Image (cartoon, rainbow, N blue to C red):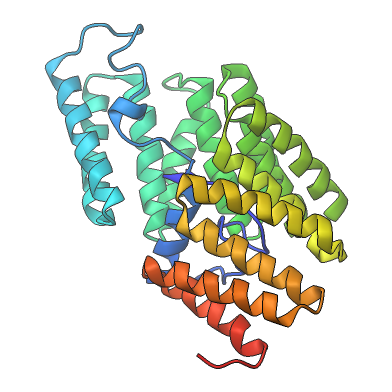
Length: 318
């Protein structure tokens, strides 16, 4: 799944303004985009990190079953079968709890929160995350708690509870550094987005530039693209067209190399917006049409509609 907070007025990673209570189908599309990069799903890739590693060399029968169920749930999520994924993660969590496998419990709570958010159930997602963030009880690793604080901050940002979002993002960064989580750039990107949502352009730009350095150091290409987009979006708002165009073009190159249609479409829309700001109508139309074709290619109705709105604004019909 991914995340990354990117450009625009929303905290959903798409850069698109969205009502706090969107239709269920729309929430699923938005949440799936946000979660790219929030968690690495699949036991082999780290959802049950440590389940067969140095901290527990012996894999018990229950643990093997939890890992197998987790993998199947991950496959279901990637196929868009969110309810099936939710059931799978619940079962994997139950098994992990029965043998008190702490990291498995943490991983599946995070997965439950992520999928619940994909289904538009922010309250359920927040409940799973609070278990990880609460003091007392099982001691979860700083890295897992950092993931929980990060996702909780994203949920707060979606709801425009920006003070809470800022507080949780700061907590996530502290926990990440304590646990050497390797995702500090992602968290600073979120702080940049929160600053942008708060109307503090200078703070957003400074945070985006700091995140860019961190993400390049961490070799996190998707988050690097997000940093570039956030900075470019601030510059676009200032009318710094050339610098904005350079940033969006650099983000587009990374997103194309990663094969991320939603982000490619977003970059093209932003490049079109810059062209509009520079009174280059034909270039803007070309970018918007490309964005529409990318969205159509993955049956992204929301992205297609957004491109259509921009095209019509320039006086061209579908």
